[in-house]
Amino acid sequence: MLKTLRSKILFYLLLVSLTGIMAVSFSLQWGFEASFNHYINENRTQRVSQLVNALKLEYKERGAFTGERVSQLFYEQAMTDSLYYKLYTPNEILLMDSTSIRGIMEGLGMRNNPYLEDSWLTATEPIKLEGRTLAVLKVYYPKGFIDSEYVFLQTIKKYLLTAVAVTVLLALFFSMLFSKRLTAGLNSLSVAVEELTKRKKGVRVPLDDLSLEMKRLGIAFNDLSMSLEKEERLRKEFTGDLAHELRTPLATLRSQIEAFQDGIWEPTPERLKQSHNEMMRLVRLVNELEKLLAAENPQIRLDKIELEAGELLGSMKELLFPVFREKDVELEVVPPSSPMVFHGDRDKIVQILTNVINNALKYSPEKRKVRVSAVQEGRMAGFLVEDEGIGIAEKDLPHIFERFYRGDKSRDRKTGGVGIGLSIVKALVEAHKGSIHVESEIGKGTTFKILFPASA
Ligand code: ADP
Image (cartoon, protein in one colour):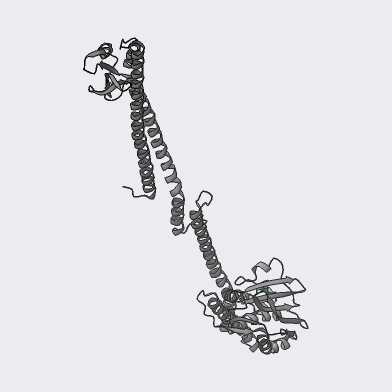
């Protein structure tokens, strides 16, 4: 019983609405009967005083109670209000009596309702004129309601009952509707979660019909589902790419060594160097992968300290100057005019700059220039690395930070690139909560802008 959320919501909604309906209908009925009783008593008092006045008038006019003025009233009140009278003199001699009309009416079957009890109540009303008691009027009236009152009450009760029945039905209908609507979102969410655990792809919760709170949950679920899919895709791509990257150098090495073994190929120093190069490519790949794994580790440890861009640029120049000279590419380092500080892990920042500046060198022909300068933007500070190299094609730009992505594969085999350098750069920049931005034009050159938060 009441195991599902929907049945619980339905039960409580019904409980609340039925309690409300009952409370309202009971208080309505009770209040109505009470005020109706009050109204009847008032009415009776009025009728009696009407009769008393008529009797007084009659006495005034005739000097005695002749019954001329009141006989009509006796009949009227007996018929419509079930009021009967006996008029006595002060010494209890009966002067008038309308109770006999009651016998006639009952004989005609005009009094027959369950509200009318067979007990009668009496009230005594003295008829006084100028302080003198002329007579005593005894009023007889039934306990309970008379016909017209009874019919009126019954009609009201019928309406009340119909209203209660309709309200109960409406409460039932809306409770079922609301309980369904309230749980619909949860249902679709739990179905989606089940599907996700079965590793189904493209699982999304439709957000349109969800309430605000559920929508937040739905959005979070859809994000989770999307990122799981992305992770899964990246994992597959990574494994595929890695196998592909390893296959070529391994196959080359294998065929070379087998050729040496079979004596088909003389192991000349030049050929051995070729094999060594292939092997070194593998070593580089493994090293780079290791660095990438470390950089992408969400628990990466950053020893952040306050760094000064000018000082960092100075040591980068020292570090890279020899390789630039070797390739005959100019390295222009422009320190900031005033000290520019930011926060970061020194070794990681050096790694980022080394990768980006090395790329600038790698993709620049001889005699060109690579310019490295400091830059400040709002609460961020960092570096601009501009080269006059071959540039990056527009179609390649969105992909250059992906693992193993290389603009020109055949050329990169020569340059030794494995397509991981910028992935490491991106992971490290993100770990610093920094940003990296690239602009490039084929044949003209490339500019990388790397920024880090100025404060820790
Ligand atoms: P790689 O080891 O191939 O250099 P990266 O991840 O460092 O791998 O770079 C990815 C690709 O981005 C490169 O293959 C190259 O096509 C392109 N690239 C990166 N930097 C530059 C640059 N300064 N000039 C031209 N192309 C670049």
